[in-house]
Image 1: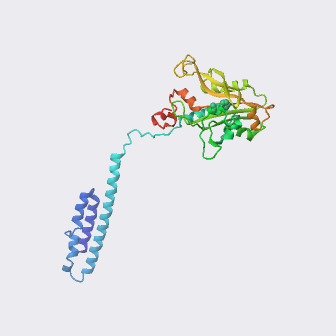
Image 2: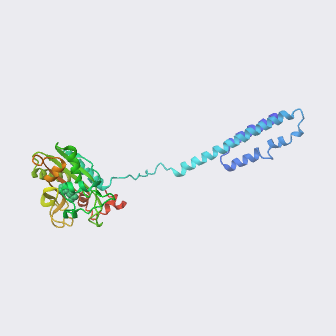
Image 3: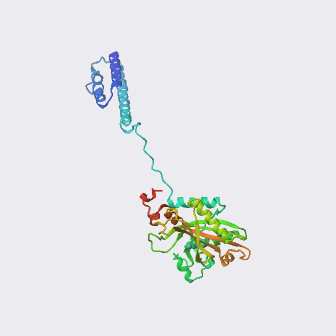
Length: 341
Ligand code: PHE
């Protein structure tokens, strides 16, 4: 009897190994462990066995039943796992397909232009300074020679805060005063990039926020020719070696004399096109010799020191360079626009 039980066990276990799916497994169970299987039947019919053999046979049969139940569980688990992984192997993953490309981010065109400008000025020996975006009326206007109620303020429509005298800077020029006060009476060569804000109607040509890059050089014997030479050098590095520049007289309260610099239109090489409005020239920055009153406010003796300053708009430069006809694209966050650069 005991040997018969052992045979049942060996057969059952070897057949179990051959099961390959749910269906064969179910069949195996009904053959070897269901109510009608020889093993369970032998347990049920224990009363037919001689009383002295009963405990040994009963114990042995129960042990085999436990072993088979355990083996069945393991096989179920094994088959479940292996079908899941073969399914994945056969359907989800095809190693012969080309890889899926990762969608990488990129720098905003304004940032790219800014970084190009930084590199050029850094190569020319200018340090990069940051100045604050929330500014006082005093630094944004008064110390730059623009008194309260002066009509020149109309050039810069201003966002005011709830605190009287505290505004959002309308240009990066207040950074000139910060830089001078931090360095006087040492010579200065810096650029001051950053965001500016103006309370304006948003149109294709004007935005309420935009970047500027301010430049400032202070020392002894700095002359207008230095300004012209330095800015022309910048234009050549930015737009190409043969770029020509021209300076037109202009007016800013904090520079005297003041000028605006045009570069020869790099789209039509001066022939005249839509972007340069047939003039052959593009205006890219305002500049001038630092006004004596501003030098004094910054802590420099105007009889001993002179300097030049300039301010340019990177968005405007990018618009000219890439033929972008609407400044609103810069903050519109339209991927179709951004992905072009
Ligand atoms: N701050 C001026 C503007 O916003 C530009 C400028 C800077 C002009 C420095 C002269 C010198 O228009």
